[in-house]
Image (cartoon, rainbow, N blue to C red):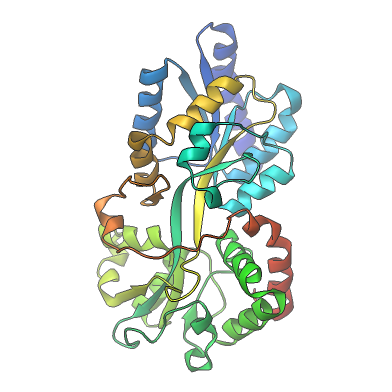
Length: 341
C-alpha cells in the first residue's frame, strides 16, 4: 500500500508541479496531512487575498516527511502541515524545517505553541480529556491524569497503545512536570488498571464506555465532538452515556497539543510560504483551520465553533509543546519498561 501511495501521488504531483514551474504565477506548494472540506475555502481565500496559488500534496505525515527527504534539494515542497508537536519535532529532527522570523506569527501564536526558534508553529489545539460512564462513575471522582493510576480503577481504564503519538506526548508532558521516575510509576499503575489491551483509535476508547467494557477512557476532545454531532450509525446514543472532565484544573492544567506547520528548508517559494503561515493566524483562517477538525483556535480572541465551545472553558497546560518531542524517547522507553503495549 505504501509503494502504491508514493507512485500515485508522485504521478499526480509531477503533473501539478510541472505546471507550476512552467507558469509565471506565484505559488506555494503545501504538503499536508489534513484533508477537510473547510480547508478548501481556506486555500481559496488565501489565493483571493494574496494572488498566490496553493498546490496541495496530501498524505500521511510520516510519508510526506520521507517524500521530502527523498526529493532532497529539488523538493518542490514549501510547507509541511501535520498533527501533534511530537510529529513536528520528528520532522525537525530529520532536517525538514528552517527557522522563520515573523513578527506577525510571534505576536499571534502563543510562545508555548510554537518552536522556540520558529521552525514550526501551531495553528489549532486539541485537549487530551478524560471521559467516564455517567452511570458508573460519579462527577468529581476523576479530576486528573494522576487519578487514572488509582487502584480503585483496576480493570476499568481504556486508552490507546504506546506507539500512539498522542499518548507519547501526554507521557512526555508528565516527564517534564513530574520527572522520569514519577512518570514511570504513573504509567505502570495505569497499565495495571487497563480494562483491556490497548486498541487503536480514540473513538474506540469512547466506544468502550458505550459497550460497558470500560468505565473511564482517554481521548482527544475532537473525537468526542464528532461523537456528539455527526456519529456513525453504530455510535448513535453513545455520547449521551458519557461524562467528561478537563484534567488537572487545580494544578498545571489540561494537556493540549497542536496541528501545525513549518516552512521546508529547501522551499523554492519561501516568501510565499511565510505569507501562507501568517495567513493561518488571521481570524478567518483560524476559524476554517480549527473547524476542519473541531479543534480550538490558537489566536486569542478567535472563538471555536459552537460544538467545541459547548465543552466549556478550561485551564490549559502552558508548557512549551516542543518538550513533547524532546522527551519523546524517554516516554517510549518508559512505555516499554512498564509493558504498555
